[in-house]
Structure formats: structure tokens, C-alpha cells
Image (cartoon, rainbow, N blue to C red):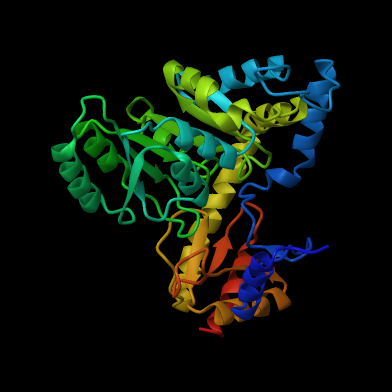
Length: 383
């Protein structure tokens, strides 16, 4: 079947530049690449508990049958959203099918025409896509640079022309490509000073940060000072979906104006039950044990990088990146590590800026100290 020449040319350009993406096969390599920080995606106990919960509640449905505004608003939605409000100390919650659709739906609808969005320059692609669909104006600020954000807020405040013109500030609690964190306390103070609304994506913080793994906002007790939190379940929680946490008015607005919520088939009951059971597991003694194991591995990883004198982007989270520079070199080094049995992925441009290509190591509760030492010692022979 013929395709437009322009499409073929784009593919050929990617091939020529050695940038063509393709889907890989599942491997049995030692996992240093997935977002499954606590190993819950493969937990047999979690799988069985979800099945038992559905059976005990006589829920034997395979699909949602429609959007939540039509026929898909299963009673489990209310139960899970109410539980998430209690767990995360939020006034209201709204479940989305994924982190991508949550960010797309939030940022395309909440900032209105005439409003302004200030976003960290390393913000996730899903947030950028949502911002592009918005009618608001948007400007980036330097990564985790509070001073640069303050300058932009001060300049914008002087130029605001309408009383109802709002400013939204967007950051992540853990950045997916660097693994670093913002100074959230300073950001909150800054947003209060300039009457801006702060939005925090906590995708890589759930299960990792805080005493109970409930994210950076809660760990710093800033729940009432953040306009919205966006939390996804496909990483440390090991399942699927996402939630927006905020005021009742915000959630009511999203139900009425968020297109990625309105015009999609709802999550099936099984997905909702898995979210509920996964939270129960994460907050249990076993879950806390997994979080403890993860943080011990993070500390050990940092000590080994220091011992071996390998330079990584500073991070105290589960994500650690070693800048290599150059797509070919980064891909070659990743292939060498994979050949030795370690699943370490190369992050190439244009996903990251040219010259910032890197090997991205994701740590987990189930990685052994021996595995961490072995993969870093092997990497040290390349550096």
C-alpha cells in the first residue's frame, strides 16, 4: 500500500541519522531500565489480591462499556477516588486512563485564553503536548532555577492587563530524564507571593518519596498549597491509570471541559481494583519494606559511583543518568551493557537535547547489591 512520500522521507531521515525508533522484545536481562521501582507490576500477591477483591464483590466485567459520562462510571470509581482523597489528603480526585491523558486533559483545558503558563524547561512531553493544545500563552524557565522563575513572574506581574488573567507554574517532583527534584518549598513561596497556581506532576515520586511513598508534596506537607497534583500509577504502583488531585471546583471543571476525560472509554473495573489493591499493598508493612529496600539500593548505588569515580547527574531518587554525549556512542555503550546481561537503555536525542545523550539507570527494590556493583564496574571500563 502506498504512503505519502513525505512520510517515507521522514522515516528515511531518521534511518540516515541512526535515530529510527523500533519496538523491542521482552528480555530476561537484569532490570535497570523499567519504572517498576517496587516490583509491583510482577507481584503475584498483588495479582491474586486483585482477583479476590473482584470475586468477593461479584465484579465479573471485562470492559467499562463507555465513557464515565455515559455508561462507564462504575461504582468502583467513586470508591477508589474517595480512598485516594483520604490517602493523599486531597479535597477531590479524578481518575484518568493514563498519565498522558491526565496531563493532556488538564493542561489543554484549565489554563484559559489570556492565561499564562510557566513551565520547567525539562517538563515531560505529555505536559508540553497539553500546553500546546491550550489557548494560554506559555513560557519556559530554566531547569529547577527558582531565581529565573522569579524574574519571569515579576516581569509578568508588571505586564498583566486583565484582573482575571491567571498564571500557572508547572514542575515535576522527580524529573524523568535527570532524576533530580525541584526546591518545592521555594516554589510554593514564590507562587504565593505572585498569586500563581502551582501544578506538580508526581509520576516518578509515588512509591519513592516520602515516609509512606506518597510523593514530595505530601512529604513536605504542602497539600493545601499546591493547586493540583497529577499522580500516575504505571510506575512504582505497577498498574495503570492516573489521578488529578485538587479542589472540588477543579475536578468539576475537568469533568465538564477536559476532552481526554470526556471523550474516552473509561477504565475497566479490573484496572480500578488493581489501583485500590496496589495502594493497600504499598502502604502495608510489606510495601514499606520494599520502599526501604529501594532506598538502600539508591544509597548503595551512589556510594559505588563515588568509589568507581563515575560521574552521574546528581540524584537522590530511583533515576540516575550518566551523560555520554553522541547517539552512536551512547547506543554502543548500552549495547555492551546489555550483552553482559544488564538492561540499561540509551536515551538519545531528540528525546534529550543533542550533546546530552545518556545512559539511564532505574533502580528497584529487587536489584541486588551484587548486580549494582557489577553493572557499574562494567560501565567504569568504558568511561
